[in-house]
Image 1 (cartoon, helix red, strand yellow):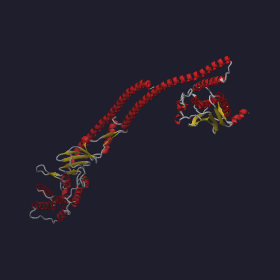
Image 2 (image 1 turned 45 degrees about the horizontal axis):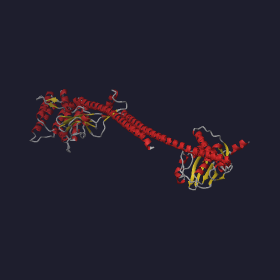
Image 3 (image 1 turned 120 degrees about the vertical axis):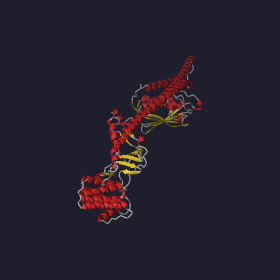
Image 4 (image 1 turned 90 degrees about the vertical axis):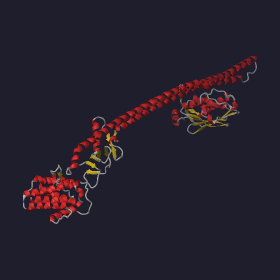
Length: 616
Protein backbone atom coordinates (compact mmCIF):
# COMPACT_ATOMS: atom_id res chain seq x y z
CA UNK A 1 0.00 0.00 0.00
CA UNK A 2 2.74 2.45 0.98
CA UNK A 3 4.74 1.78 -2.18
CA UNK A 4 1.64 2.32 -4.30
CA UNK A 5 0.90 5.66 -2.59
CA UNK A 6 4.50 6.94 -2.62
CA UNK A 7 4.41 8.48 -6.16
CA UNK A 8 1.12 10.21 -5.35
CA UNK A 9 2.52 11.50 -2.06
CA UNK A 10 5.70 12.83 -3.74
CA UNK A 11 3.66 14.57 -6.45
CA UNK A 12 1.37 16.16 -3.86
CA UNK A 13 4.31 17.35 -1.74
CA UNK A 14 6.08 18.88 -4.75
CA UNK A 15 2.87 20.52 -5.92
CA UNK A 16 2.14 21.96 -2.47
CA UNK A 17 5.74 23.22 -2.19
CA UNK A 18 5.48 25.02 -5.54
CA UNK A 19 2.09 26.45 -4.59
CA UNK A 20 3.48 27.59 -1.22
CA UNK A 21 6.35 29.42 -2.95
CA UNK A 22 3.92 31.09 -5.33
CA UNK A 23 1.54 32.11 -2.56
CA UNK A 24 4.48 33.47 -0.54
CA UNK A 25 5.61 35.61 -3.47
CA UNK A 26 2.07 36.82 -3.99
CA UNK A 27 1.80 37.72 -0.31
CA UNK A 28 5.01 39.75 -0.54
CA UNK A 29 3.58 41.56 -3.57
CA UNK A 30 0.41 42.39 -1.61
CA UNK A 31 2.50 43.64 1.33
CA UNK A 32 4.59 45.82 -1.01
CA UNK A 33 1.42 47.25 -2.57
CA UNK A 34 0.09 48.09 0.89
CA UNK A 35 3.34 49.83 1.89
CA UNK A 36 3.42 51.77 -1.39
CA UNK A 37 -0.15 52.93 -0.87
CA UNK A 38 0.65 53.94 2.71
CA UNK A 39 3.73 55.83 1.51
CA UNK A 40 1.59 57.62 -1.08
CA UNK A 41 -0.92 58.66 1.58
CA UNK A 42 1.87 59.78 3.89
CA UNK A 43 3.55 61.72 1.05
CA UNK A 44 0.33 63.55 0.26
CA UNK A 45 -0.11 64.36 3.92
CA UNK A 46 3.45 65.66 4.19
CA UNK A 47 2.99 67.85 1.11
CA UNK A 48 -0.21 69.34 2.54
CA UNK A 49 1.47 69.91 5.90
CA UNK A 50 4.39 71.65 4.19
CA UNK A 51 1.94 73.84 2.28
CA UNK A 52 0.08 74.66 5.50
CA UNK A 53 3.39 75.39 7.29
CA UNK A 54 4.53 77.81 4.55
CA UNK A 55 1.12 79.48 4.34
CA UNK A 56 0.91 79.93 8.10
CA UNK A 57 4.45 81.32 8.29
CA UNK A 58 3.71 83.74 5.47
CA UNK A 59 0.51 84.92 7.17
CA UNK A 60 2.43 85.54 10.41
CA UNK A 61 5.18 87.51 8.68
CA UNK A 62 2.67 89.55 6.70
CA UNK A 63 0.75 90.33 9.88
CA UNK A 64 3.86 91.70 11.57
CA UNK A 65 4.93 93.58 8.43
CA UNK A 66 1.52 95.23 8.22
CA UNK A 67 1.78 96.29 11.86
CA UNK A 68 5.39 97.56 11.54
CA UNK A 69 4.51 101.24 10.73
CA UNK A 70 2.13 101.36 13.70
CA UNK A 71 4.73 99.76 15.92
CA UNK A 72 7.44 102.28 14.94
CA UNK A 73 5.07 105.20 15.39
CA UNK A 74 3.87 103.94 18.77
CA UNK A 75 7.47 103.60 19.86
CA UNK A 76 8.00 107.36 19.31
CA UNK A 77 4.54 108.65 20.25
CA UNK A 78 3.33 107.62 23.71
CA UNK A 79 -0.15 108.89 22.85
CA UNK A 80 -0.57 106.48 19.98
CA UNK A 81 -2.59 103.31 20.62
CA UNK A 82 -0.66 100.08 20.07
CA UNK A 83 -3.07 97.22 20.71
CA UNK A 84 -1.65 93.77 20.05
CA UNK A 85 1.90 95.04 19.46
CA UNK A 86 5.08 94.01 21.27
CA UNK A 87 8.42 95.80 21.31
CA UNK A 88 11.44 95.21 23.45
CA UNK A 89 14.78 97.02 23.09
CA UNK A 90 17.87 96.80 25.23
CA UNK A 91 16.06 94.16 27.31
CA UNK A 92 13.33 96.68 28.16
CA UNK A 93 9.70 96.24 27.15
CA UNK A 94 8.44 99.33 25.38
CA UNK A 95 5.18 97.92 24.06
CA UNK A 96 2.80 97.16 25.64
CA UNK A 97 3.72 100.16 27.81
CA UNK A 98 4.52 99.41 31.46
CA UNK A 99 3.63 101.39 34.57
CA UNK A 100 7.25 101.90 35.63
CA UNK A 101 6.61 104.17 38.61
CA UNK A 102 9.03 105.16 41.31
CA UNK A 103 8.51 102.95 44.34
CA UNK A 104 9.30 105.68 46.88
CA UNK A 105 6.58 106.27 49.42
CA UNK A 106 6.33 110.08 49.16
CA UNK A 107 4.97 112.34 46.38
CA UNK A 108 7.64 115.01 45.62
CA UNK A 109 6.02 116.29 42.43
CA UNK A 110 2.65 116.84 44.07
CA UNK A 111 4.25 118.49 47.09
CA UNK A 112 6.38 120.77 44.90
CA UNK A 113 3.30 121.77 42.91
CA UNK A 114 1.58 122.74 46.15
CA UNK A 115 4.58 124.81 47.28
CA UNK A 116 4.78 126.53 43.91
CA UNK A 117 1.13 127.44 44.14
CA UNK A 118 1.59 128.71 47.66
CA UNK A 119 4.75 130.66 46.70
CA UNK A 120 6.79 128.89 49.37
CA UNK A 121 9.22 127.13 47.06
CA UNK A 122 12.81 128.34 47.49
CA UNK A 123 16.11 127.21 45.95
CA UNK A 124 19.23 126.40 47.84
CA UNK A 125 22.46 128.23 47.10
CA UNK A 126 23.86 125.35 45.04
CA UNK A 127 20.67 125.00 42.93
CA UNK A 128 21.45 127.70 40.37
CA UNK A 129 19.35 126.34 37.45
CA UNK A 130 16.37 125.78 39.72
CA UNK A 131 16.73 129.28 41.17
CA UNK A 132 16.83 130.66 37.62
CA UNK A 133 13.72 128.65 36.78
CA UNK A 134 11.86 130.13 39.71
CA UNK A 135 12.86 133.63 38.56
CA UNK A 136 11.64 132.85 35.04
CA UNK A 137 8.33 131.75 36.51
CA UNK A 138 8.07 134.98 38.48
CA UNK A 139 8.71 136.94 35.25
CA UNK A 140 5.76 135.19 33.62
CA UNK A 141 3.62 135.91 36.71
CA UNK A 142 4.52 139.58 36.63
CA UNK A 143 3.66 139.88 32.94
CA UNK A 144 0.35 138.13 33.56
CA UNK A 145 -0.42 140.40 36.49
CA UNK A 146 0.33 143.45 34.29
CA UNK A 147 -1.81 141.97 31.54
CA UNK A 148 1.08 142.50 29.19
CA UNK A 149 0.38 140.05 26.40
CA UNK A 150 3.64 140.61 24.62
CA UNK A 151 5.60 140.57 27.82
CA UNK A 152 3.86 137.35 28.84
CA UNK A 153 4.79 135.78 25.55
CA UNK A 154 8.40 136.89 25.82
CA UNK A 155 8.66 135.72 29.44
CA UNK A 156 7.15 132.34 28.46
CA UNK A 157 9.60 131.97 25.56
CA UNK A 158 12.49 132.83 27.89
CA UNK A 159 11.24 130.12 30.27
CA UNK A 160 11.12 127.61 27.46
CA UNK A 161 14.62 128.52 26.34
CA UNK A 162 15.88 128.05 29.86
CA UNK A 163 14.11 124.68 29.90
CA UNK A 164 15.99 123.57 26.80
CA UNK A 165 19.34 124.72 28.16
CA UNK A 166 19.04 123.14 31.59
CA UNK A 167 17.73 119.66 32.34
CA UNK A 168 16.01 119.60 35.68
CA UNK A 169 14.59 116.70 37.59
CA UNK A 170 11.15 115.75 36.32
CA UNK A 171 9.68 116.26 39.79
CA UNK A 172 10.69 119.93 39.42
CA UNK A 173 10.43 120.45 35.67
CA UNK A 174 6.89 119.21 35.10
CA UNK A 175 5.23 120.77 38.18
CA UNK A 176 6.84 124.16 37.45
CA UNK A 177 5.81 124.16 33.79
CA UNK A 178 2.34 122.95 34.74
CA UNK A 179 1.86 125.85 37.16
CA UNK A 180 2.96 128.40 34.52
CA UNK A 181 0.75 126.95 31.79
CA UNK A 182 -2.27 126.78 34.12
CA UNK A 183 -1.77 130.48 34.99
CA UNK A 184 -1.31 131.45 31.36
CA UNK A 185 -4.43 129.51 30.35
CA UNK A 186 -6.42 131.10 33.17
CA UNK A 187 -5.28 134.74 32.80
CA UNK A 188 -3.24 135.20 29.63
CA UNK A 189 -4.20 135.78 26.02
CA UNK A 190 -1.52 133.62 24.50
CA UNK A 191 -1.44 132.22 20.94
CA UNK A 192 -3.62 129.05 20.91
CA UNK A 193 -1.19 127.08 18.69
CA UNK A 194 1.56 127.71 21.21
CA UNK A 195 -0.57 126.42 24.05
CA UNK A 196 -1.64 123.32 22.08
CA UNK A 197 1.98 122.61 21.32
CA UNK A 198 3.01 123.02 24.93
CA UNK A 199 0.13 120.88 26.25
CA UNK A 200 0.03 118.15 23.56
CA UNK A 201 1.90 118.35 20.27
CA UNK A 202 5.25 119.70 21.42
CA UNK A 203 7.50 122.42 19.90
CA UNK A 204 10.78 122.62 18.06
CA UNK A 205 13.34 124.24 20.31
CA UNK A 206 14.86 126.26 17.44
CA UNK A 207 18.38 125.27 18.50
CA UNK A 208 19.64 122.35 16.45
CA UNK A 209 16.35 120.66 15.61
CA UNK A 210 15.51 119.40 19.12
CA UNK A 211 11.95 119.03 20.27
CA UNK A 212 10.12 120.04 23.39
CA UNK A 213 7.49 117.42 24.09
CA UNK A 214 3.99 118.48 25.10
CA UNK A 215 2.81 117.97 28.65
CA UNK A 216 0.69 114.93 27.81
CA UNK A 217 3.52 113.07 26.10
CA UNK A 218 6.04 114.23 28.70
CA UNK A 219 3.99 112.85 31.60
CA UNK A 220 3.71 109.51 29.84
CA UNK A 221 7.37 109.40 28.84
CA UNK A 222 8.70 110.36 32.28
CA UNK A 223 6.32 108.13 34.23
CA UNK A 224 9.20 106.12 35.68
CA UNK A 225 10.41 109.28 37.49
CA UNK A 226 7.19 109.63 39.46
CA UNK A 227 5.50 107.72 42.16
CA UNK A 228 2.04 106.40 41.48
CA UNK A 229 0.49 109.23 43.46
CA UNK A 230 2.52 111.86 41.59
CA UNK A 231 1.60 110.30 38.22
CA UNK A 232 -2.12 110.26 39.00
CA UNK A 233 -1.95 113.85 40.26
CA UNK A 234 -0.09 115.12 37.18
CA UNK A 235 -2.42 113.17 34.87
CA UNK A 236 -5.46 114.81 36.42
CA UNK A 237 -3.93 118.32 36.24
CA UNK A 238 -2.73 117.84 32.63
CA UNK A 239 -6.16 116.50 31.62
CA UNK A 240 -7.86 119.55 33.17
CA UNK A 241 -5.40 121.90 31.43
CA UNK A 242 -5.98 120.09 28.12
CA UNK A 243 -9.71 120.60 28.37
CA UNK A 244 -9.19 124.29 29.21
CA UNK A 245 -7.04 124.94 26.13
CA UNK A 246 -9.19 122.75 23.87
CA UNK A 247 -6.88 119.87 23.00
CA UNK A 248 -7.92 116.19 22.87
CA UNK A 249 -7.57 114.31 26.12
CA UNK A 250 -9.27 110.94 25.49
CA UNK A 251 -6.22 109.21 24.04
CA UNK A 252 -4.05 110.60 26.87
CA UNK A 253 -6.42 109.16 29.46
CA UNK A 254 -6.64 105.86 27.56
CA UNK A 255 -2.85 105.49 27.41
CA UNK A 256 -2.58 106.21 31.11
CA UNK A 257 -5.15 103.51 31.91
CA UNK A 258 -3.51 100.97 29.59
CA UNK A 259 -0.20 100.93 31.41
CA UNK A 260 0.54 97.32 32.36
CA UNK A 261 1.73 96.45 35.83
CA UNK A 262 3.98 93.55 34.73
CA UNK A 263 5.79 92.63 31.51
CA UNK A 264 4.34 90.02 29.19
CA UNK A 265 5.53 86.47 29.83
CA UNK A 266 7.31 86.03 26.53
CA UNK A 267 10.73 84.52 25.72
CA UNK A 268 13.59 86.71 26.93
CA UNK A 269 15.76 85.90 23.92
CA UNK A 270 14.48 85.44 20.38
CA UNK A 271 17.17 84.34 17.92
CA UNK A 272 14.73 83.49 15.11
CA UNK A 273 11.08 84.10 14.27
CA UNK A 274 8.93 82.13 16.71
CA UNK A 275 5.26 81.48 17.41
CA UNK A 276 4.14 81.60 21.04
CA UNK A 277 1.10 79.45 21.77
CA UNK A 278 -0.28 82.13 24.10
CA UNK A 279 -1.01 84.17 20.95
CA UNK A 280 2.10 86.09 19.81
CA UNK A 281 4.34 86.08 16.76
CA UNK A 282 7.86 87.40 17.52
CA UNK A 283 10.87 88.33 15.38
CA UNK A 284 14.32 89.43 16.53
CA UNK A 285 15.11 93.15 16.16
CA UNK A 286 17.97 95.58 16.78
CA UNK A 287 19.50 96.46 19.08
CA UNK A 288 18.95 93.35 21.16
CA UNK A 289 15.28 93.80 20.57
CA UNK A 290 12.18 91.83 19.77
CA UNK A 291 9.19 92.85 17.70
CA UNK A 292 5.91 91.02 17.72
CA UNK A 293 2.22 91.10 17.07
CA UNK A 294 -0.66 89.45 18.87
CA UNK A 295 -2.68 87.01 16.85
CA UNK A 296 -5.75 84.83 17.01
CA UNK A 297 -4.09 81.47 16.47
CA UNK A 298 -7.34 79.42 16.32
CA UNK A 299 -8.70 81.97 13.84
CA UNK A 300 -5.57 81.71 11.68
CA UNK A 301 -5.76 77.93 11.65
CA UNK A 302 -9.46 78.04 10.83
CA UNK A 303 -8.83 80.50 8.01
CA UNK A 304 -6.04 78.31 6.63
CA UNK A 305 -8.32 75.29 6.85
CA UNK A 306 -11.06 77.14 4.99
CA UNK A 307 -8.62 78.25 2.27
CA UNK A 308 -7.33 74.72 1.75
CA UNK A 309 -10.89 73.42 1.52
CA UNK A 310 -11.74 76.06 -1.09
CA UNK A 311 -8.69 75.07 -3.10
CA UNK A 312 -9.77 71.43 -2.97
CA UNK A 313 -6.75 70.38 -0.93
CA UNK A 314 -8.83 69.24 2.05
CA UNK A 315 -12.14 67.46 2.41
CA UNK A 316 -15.01 69.14 4.21
CA UNK A 317 -14.18 67.33 7.45
CA UNK A 318 -10.40 68.01 7.33
CA UNK A 319 -8.67 70.64 9.48
CA UNK A 320 -5.24 72.11 10.25
CA UNK A 321 -3.86 71.90 13.80
CA UNK A 322 -0.71 72.62 15.78
CA UNK A 323 -0.18 69.47 17.84
CA UNK A 324 2.10 69.24 20.84
CA UNK A 325 2.44 71.24 24.05
CA UNK A 326 5.67 73.25 23.55
CA UNK A 327 4.93 76.91 24.48
CA UNK A 328 7.35 78.37 21.89
CA UNK A 329 7.53 77.07 18.31
CA UNK A 330 10.18 77.90 15.73
CA UNK A 331 8.66 79.33 12.55
CA UNK A 332 11.09 77.27 10.46
CA UNK A 333 9.85 74.02 11.99
CA UNK A 334 6.22 74.55 12.93
CA UNK A 335 4.65 71.20 13.88
CA UNK A 336 1.71 71.75 11.55
CA UNK A 337 -0.56 68.75 11.22
CA UNK A 338 -3.27 68.31 8.61
CA UNK A 339 -5.92 65.94 9.90
CA UNK A 340 -8.64 64.37 7.80
CA UNK A 341 -10.94 61.42 8.55
CA UNK A 342 -10.62 60.54 4.87
CA UNK A 343 -7.02 59.48 5.50
CA UNK A 344 -8.08 57.29 8.38
CA UNK A 345 -10.70 55.78 6.09
CA UNK A 346 -8.03 55.29 3.43
CA UNK A 347 -5.74 53.59 5.93
CA UNK A 348 -8.61 51.38 7.07
CA UNK A 349 -9.47 50.53 3.45
CA UNK A 350 -5.83 49.60 2.78
CA UNK A 351 -5.75 47.41 5.87
CA UNK A 352 -9.05 45.77 4.93
CA UNK A 353 -7.91 45.07 1.38
CA UNK A 354 -4.64 43.63 2.66
CA UNK A 355 -6.48 41.45 5.16
CA UNK A 356 -8.90 40.31 2.46
CA UNK A 357 -6.07 39.42 0.11
CA UNK A 358 -4.20 37.63 2.89
CA UNK A 359 -7.40 35.77 3.77
CA UNK A 360 -7.85 34.77 0.15
CA UNK A 361 -4.28 33.48 0.08
CA UNK A 362 -4.87 31.56 3.30
CA UNK A 363 -8.09 30.13 1.85
CA UNK A 364 -6.24 29.16 -1.32
CA UNK A 365 -3.57 27.45 0.77
CA UNK A 366 -6.22 25.71 2.88
CA UNK A 367 -8.11 24.71 -0.26
CA UNK A 368 -4.93 23.33 -1.79
CA UNK A 369 -4.17 21.38 1.36
CA UNK A 370 -7.74 20.11 1.46
CA UNK A 371 -7.61 19.08 -2.19
CA UNK A 372 -4.27 17.39 -1.63
CA UNK A 373 -5.60 15.58 1.44
CA UNK A 374 -8.75 14.57 -0.43
CA UNK A 375 -6.68 13.39 -3.36
CA UNK A 376 -4.47 11.37 -1.06
CA UNK A 377 -7.49 9.96 0.78
CA UNK A 378 -9.22 9.21 -2.52
CA UNK A 379 -6.14 7.46 -3.83
CA UNK A 380 -5.79 5.59 -0.57
CA UNK A 381 -9.46 4.60 -0.68
CA UNK A 382 -9.08 3.60 -4.29
CA UNK A 383 -6.25 1.24 -3.47
CA UNK A 384 -8.07 0.13 -0.34
CA UNK A 385 -11.20 -0.50 -2.40
CA UNK A 386 -9.18 -2.49 -4.88
CA UNK A 387 -7.75 -4.56 -2.02
CA UNK A 388 -11.21 -5.02 -0.52
CA UNK A 389 -12.58 -5.89 -3.91
CA UNK A 390 -9.82 -8.42 -4.41
CA UNK A 391 -10.39 -9.83 -0.92
CA UNK A 392 -14.16 -9.88 -1.46
CA UNK A 393 -13.86 -11.65 -4.78
CA UNK A 394 -11.51 -14.17 -3.21
CA UNK A 395 -13.76 -14.63 -0.18
CA UNK A 396 -16.97 -14.94 -2.18
CA UNK A 397 -15.25 -17.26 -4.61
CA UNK A 398 -14.12 -19.39 -1.71
CA UNK A 399 -17.55 -19.24 -0.07
CA UNK A 400 -19.23 -20.23 -3.33
CA UNK A 401 -16.68 -22.89 -4.25
CA UNK A 402 -16.82 -24.63 -0.87
CA UNK A 403 -20.59 -25.41 -0.82
CA UNK A 404 -20.57 -26.16 -4.55
CA UNK A 405 -17.74 -28.62 -4.04
CA UNK A 406 -19.58 -30.15 -1.09
CA UNK A 407 -22.81 -30.42 -3.09
CA UNK A 408 -20.97 -32.09 -6.02
CA UNK A 409 -19.13 -34.50 -3.73
CA UNK A 410 -22.31 -35.42 -1.83
CA UNK A 411 -24.25 -35.82 -5.07
CA UNK A 412 -21.59 -38.11 -6.60
CA UNK A 413 -21.45 -40.15 -3.41
CA UNK A 414 -25.23 -40.33 -3.33
CA UNK A 415 -25.26 -41.44 -7.00
CA UNK A 416 -22.68 -44.15 -6.29
CA UNK A 417 -24.49 -45.44 -3.22
CA UNK A 418 -27.84 -45.50 -5.00
CA UNK A 419 -26.24 -47.38 -7.91
CA UNK A 420 -24.71 -49.88 -5.50
CA UNK A 421 -27.97 -50.15 -3.57
CA UNK A 422 -26.32 -48.90 -0.38
CA UNK A 423 -27.86 -46.65 2.28
CA UNK A 424 -27.84 -42.90 1.28
CA UNK A 425 -27.67 -41.90 4.95
CA UNK A 426 -28.10 -38.08 5.47
CA UNK A 427 -26.58 -36.99 2.16
CA UNK A 428 -29.81 -35.40 0.84
CA UNK A 429 -30.21 -33.31 4.00
CA UNK A 430 -26.58 -32.22 3.85
CA UNK A 431 -27.00 -31.28 0.17
CA UNK A 432 -30.04 -29.21 1.08
CA UNK A 433 -28.17 -27.52 3.95
CA UNK A 434 -25.23 -26.62 1.69
CA UNK A 435 -27.62 -25.32 -0.96
CA UNK A 436 -29.44 -23.25 1.68
CA UNK A 437 -26.11 -21.77 2.82
CA UNK A 438 -25.25 -20.96 -0.76
CA UNK A 439 -28.65 -19.40 -1.28
CA UNK A 440 -28.33 -17.37 1.93
CA UNK A 441 -24.99 -15.99 0.75
CA UNK A 442 -26.42 -15.01 -2.63
CA UNK A 443 -29.46 -13.47 -0.98
CA UNK A 444 -27.17 -11.40 1.31
CA UNK A 445 -25.20 -10.16 -1.68
CA UNK A 446 -28.31 -9.26 -3.70
CA UNK A 447 -30.07 -7.63 -0.74
CA UNK A 448 -27.02 -5.57 0.20
CA UNK A 449 -26.65 -4.38 -3.38
CA UNK A 450 -30.31 -3.39 -3.69
CA UNK A 451 -30.32 -1.52 -0.36
CA UNK A 452 -26.98 0.13 -1.11
CA UNK A 453 -28.26 1.37 -4.48
CA UNK A 454 -31.54 2.53 -2.94
CA UNK A 455 -33.60 0.16 -5.03
CA UNK A 456 -35.31 -1.61 -2.12
CA UNK A 457 -38.36 0.24 -0.80
CA UNK A 458 -39.50 -1.51 2.41
CA UNK A 459 -43.11 -2.67 2.50
CA UNK A 460 -44.08 -1.70 6.00
CA UNK A 461 -46.71 -3.73 7.74
CA UNK A 462 -47.40 -4.98 11.28
CA UNK A 463 -45.01 -7.83 12.06
CA UNK A 464 -45.34 -9.94 15.18
CA UNK A 465 -41.95 -10.49 16.82
CA UNK A 466 -42.93 -13.86 18.32
CA UNK A 467 -43.76 -15.16 14.82
CA UNK A 468 -40.36 -14.02 13.53
CA UNK A 469 -38.61 -15.77 16.43
CA UNK A 470 -40.58 -19.02 15.79
CA UNK A 471 -39.63 -18.94 12.10
CA UNK A 472 -35.98 -18.30 13.01
CA UNK A 473 -36.05 -21.29 15.41
CA UNK A 474 -37.35 -23.60 12.66
CA UNK A 475 -34.72 -22.38 10.20
CA UNK A 476 -31.94 -22.93 12.73
CA UNK A 477 -33.15 -26.41 13.63
CA UNK A 478 -33.11 -27.51 10.02
CA UNK A 479 -30.22 -25.52 8.60
CA UNK A 480 -27.72 -24.70 11.34
CA UNK A 481 -24.39 -26.50 11.04
CA UNK A 482 -24.14 -26.82 14.85
CA UNK A 483 -26.70 -27.43 17.59
CA UNK A 484 -28.56 -24.23 18.48
CA UNK A 485 -30.82 -23.43 21.44
CA UNK A 486 -32.97 -20.36 20.84
CA UNK A 487 -34.95 -18.96 23.75
CA UNK A 488 -37.20 -15.93 23.67
CA UNK A 489 -38.79 -13.55 26.12
CA UNK A 490 -41.10 -11.64 23.79
CA UNK A 491 -44.66 -10.50 23.99
CA UNK A 492 -47.23 -10.06 21.27
CA UNK A 493 -45.65 -6.77 20.23
CA UNK A 494 -46.00 -5.78 16.61
CA UNK A 495 -43.28 -3.89 14.75
CA UNK A 496 -43.92 -1.60 11.79
CA UNK A 497 -41.44 -3.24 9.42
CA UNK A 498 -40.80 -5.17 6.23
CA UNK A 499 -41.14 -8.84 7.30
CA UNK A 500 -38.67 -10.14 4.69
CA UNK A 501 -35.95 -7.65 5.68
CA UNK A 502 -36.50 -8.16 9.40
CA UNK A 503 -36.27 -11.93 8.92
CA UNK A 504 -32.99 -11.44 6.99
CA UNK A 505 -31.65 -9.25 9.83
CA UNK A 506 -32.36 -11.87 12.53
CA UNK A 507 -30.99 -14.66 10.35
CA UNK A 508 -27.69 -12.81 9.86
CA UNK A 509 -27.36 -12.19 13.61
CA UNK A 510 -28.02 -15.88 14.28
CA UNK A 511 -25.61 -17.16 11.61
CA UNK A 512 -22.96 -14.68 12.81
CA UNK A 513 -23.39 -16.02 16.39
CA UNK A 514 -22.97 -19.59 15.10
CA UNK A 515 -19.85 -18.71 13.07
CA UNK A 516 -18.09 -16.93 15.94
CA UNK A 517 -18.73 -19.52 18.59
CA UNK A 518 -16.72 -22.38 20.07
CA UNK A 519 -19.38 -23.76 22.41
CA UNK A 520 -21.93 -26.47 21.87
CA UNK A 521 -24.75 -25.90 21.82
CA UNK A 522 -24.94 -22.30 20.59
CA UNK A 523 -27.34 -20.45 22.85
CA UNK A 524 -29.36 -17.52 21.53
CA UNK A 525 -31.84 -15.37 23.44
CA UNK A 526 -34.25 -12.73 22.09
CA UNK A 527 -35.95 -10.31 24.49
CA UNK A 528 -38.18 -7.27 24.02
CA UNK A 529 -37.81 -4.03 25.95
CA UNK A 530 -39.94 -0.89 26.13
CA UNK A 531 -39.89 1.76 23.37
CA UNK A 532 -39.56 -0.73 20.52
CA UNK A 533 -36.20 -2.19 21.62
CA UNK A 534 -35.23 -5.81 20.92
CA UNK A 535 -32.11 -7.42 22.37
CA UNK A 536 -30.37 -10.38 20.71
CA UNK A 537 -27.84 -12.19 22.96
CA UNK A 538 -25.48 -15.06 22.11
CA UNK A 539 -22.78 -17.04 23.93
CA UNK A 540 -20.11 -16.52 21.28
CA UNK A 541 -16.48 -15.48 21.58
CA UNK A 542 -17.31 -11.80 21.98
CA UNK A 543 -16.22 -8.60 20.23
CA UNK A 544 -13.44 -6.34 21.56
CA UNK A 545 -14.90 -2.99 22.65
CA UNK A 546 -12.66 -1.11 20.22
CA UNK A 547 -14.32 -3.07 17.37
CA UNK A 548 -17.96 -2.47 18.35
CA UNK A 549 -18.48 0.07 15.58
CA UNK A 550 -16.05 -1.31 13.05
CA UNK A 551 -17.83 -4.66 12.84
CA UNK A 552 -20.70 -2.88 11.07
CA UNK A 553 -18.40 -1.82 8.23
CA UNK A 554 -18.52 -3.33 4.77
CA UNK A 555 -16.30 -6.37 4.21
CA UNK A 556 -14.95 -6.12 7.76
CA UNK A 557 -14.37 -9.49 9.39
CA UNK A 558 -13.14 -10.42 12.82
CA UNK A 559 -10.65 -13.23 13.13
CA UNK A 560 -11.77 -16.20 15.19
CA UNK A 561 -10.28 -17.32 18.47
CA UNK A 562 -6.76 -18.79 18.16
CA UNK A 563 -6.49 -17.10 14.80
CA UNK A 564 -8.77 -19.59 13.04
CA UNK A 565 -10.39 -18.50 9.78
CA UNK A 566 -14.12 -17.84 10.03
CA UNK A 567 -16.16 -18.29 6.84
CA UNK A 568 -18.26 -15.40 5.60
CA UNK A 569 -18.42 -12.43 3.19
CA UNK A 570 -17.98 -9.61 5.73
CA UNK A 571 -21.38 -8.14 4.81
CA UNK A 572 -23.64 -9.68 7.45
CA UNK A 573 -23.57 -7.00 10.18
CA UNK A 574 -23.24 -4.19 7.60
CA UNK A 575 -26.46 -5.46 5.98
CA UNK A 576 -28.17 -5.69 9.41
CA UNK A 577 -27.43 -2.05 10.24
CA UNK A 578 -28.61 -0.89 6.83
CA UNK A 579 -31.87 -2.77 7.27
CA UNK A 580 -32.35 -1.09 10.66
CA UNK A 581 -31.67 2.36 9.22
CA UNK A 582 -33.95 1.66 6.27
CA UNK A 583 -36.75 1.30 8.85
CA UNK A 584 -35.71 4.47 10.69
CA UNK A 585 -34.21 2.45 13.54
CA UNK A 586 -30.80 1.61 14.96
CA UNK A 587 -28.63 -1.43 15.63
CA UNK A 588 -25.70 -1.39 18.03
CA UNK A 589 -23.59 -3.53 20.37
CA UNK A 590 -24.59 -2.84 23.97
CA UNK A 591 -22.42 -5.46 25.69
CA UNK A 592 -19.77 -8.02 24.74
CA UNK A 593 -17.35 -10.24 26.58
CA UNK A 594 -15.87 -13.74 26.36
CA UNK A 595 -19.27 -15.03 27.53
CA UNK A 596 -21.12 -13.59 24.57
CA UNK A 597 -22.44 -10.48 22.83
CA UNK A 598 -25.69 -8.52 23.08
CA UNK A 599 -27.05 -6.53 20.13
CA UNK A 600 -29.88 -4.02 20.59
CA UNK A 601 -32.29 -3.31 17.74
CA UNK A 602 -34.66 -0.36 17.91
CA UNK A 603 -37.57 -0.22 15.47
CA UNK A 604 -40.83 1.73 15.40
CA UNK A 605 -43.74 -0.13 16.98
CA UNK A 606 -46.97 -0.55 15.09
CA UNK A 607 -49.74 1.64 16.64
CA UNK A 608 -52.35 -0.45 18.37
CA UNK A 609 -55.12 1.86 17.17
CA UNK A 610 -54.08 1.40 13.57
CA UNK A 611 -54.12 -2.38 14.04
CA UNK A 612 -57.66 -2.36 15.40
CA UNK A 613 -58.86 -0.20 12.51
CA UNK A 614 -57.24 -2.43 9.93
CA UNK A 615 -58.82 -5.47 11.60
CA UNK A 616 -62.22 -3.79 11.51
